[in-house]
Image (cartoon, rainbow, N blue to C red; front, side):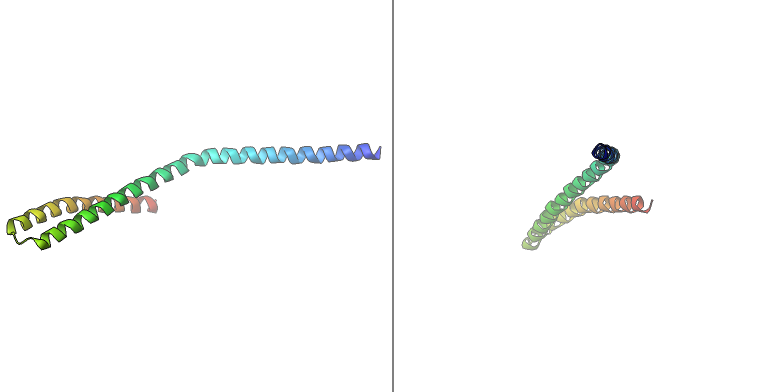
Length: 110
């Protein structure tokens, strides 16, 4: 009788532990499902930031090349043309980055 009682007691402990683990796993699964869109959104933002960064790197190389070209030319017309192009291109880039920075700062404050 003692062995049967011990077995029944062990089965009861096992069932409680199993039920607790199943409930914990279910809760964890629900939590992960809730967080998945947040992680996806963060991943999308990181990918966009990386793409912007790569564009900035490419543009910085273009700017360095144009500045080098400007230094090597003696023609005033060419210098004015380069200056106009640089001002238009990098002025727009600067404005865009400033707007992006302000938007990011506002999101972090709220």
